[in-house]
Image (cartoon, rainbow, N blue to C red; front, side, top):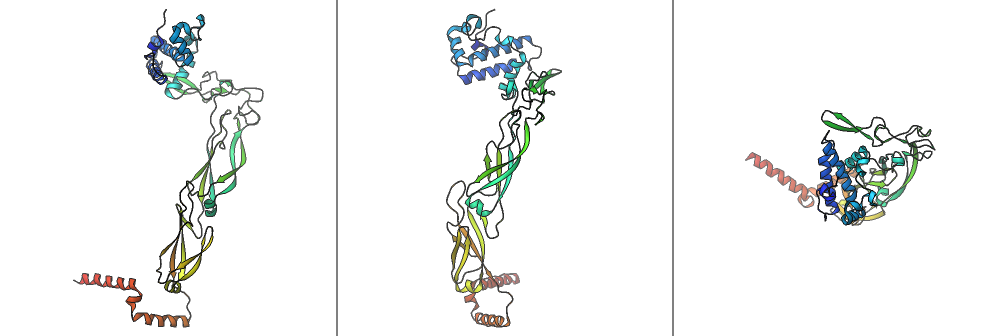
Length: 383
């Protein structure tokens, strides 16, 4: 029986690109898939025919031979490339189903392991690292100790006793999935015998008891870049849990939490602090020493400074970890009322108050403005 043209089988033109061929193959494979056509021998044959056509046309060398010599160029009985009339049909139907299911539906076989054993990437881990504001702004290097799952050295992560290997699961044929027929529907489920791994361990490793991983604690050095803040995280690739069956490890994410500082508060790249001053300094002016993360600086207080005034010290803040200009330090002054006064001090203050009352509007403009506003408010109510 003569074979149909492979391009015709997939419904694609001879000058179709690789992406166009793949799209045509998926469309045809979905149309004739056995799960969509139960007990349909013709659909099963066409499904295998699609598989055979794709295996040839998806390989650039085989496609070139087929384009030049036709089926003879890829027929092993005629010296071709090994995809002859019975190539697809002679294979195990589960192999065809597994390949197409993985390619079309995103499932299918696991990663390559020993003897077809499925391997799984290890879990990512999270570590909460608490830093002082000084360390977060300047950057630092810290040692952390974490519990984690690492690959068993006795079995090299396979889970099988040294000298033995995991065996292919006979229930699912190594696919990790089994199909169950329920009425008109064919359902695919995780294999109950191997729990989806595709292999079974008949002689487990005594150290890890067949798991391929053991619990350990390891010490890591974490380089914290300058400028990090609460919520930032540092990724340490490959420092998470070891993968199953020799699979690749996950990653470790170090979550940053900056401790509350007794003096400074941080908002993005700026720092804020409260500075108490006496009412004498506020009235007459002066100079006082204030702290920064880089040392002490002098802050000049002009005369007649009001409580709550904000002074900006440029470049005394934080350089953001993602780049940008250094922030500022903003100092808010609070005029402090004196407490525990002596009799002499009280007398002096009363004398000072009497002097002030003679021309209060001049010396206390905010208070005078507020009194005028209150007066107008009550006059409005009376009207």
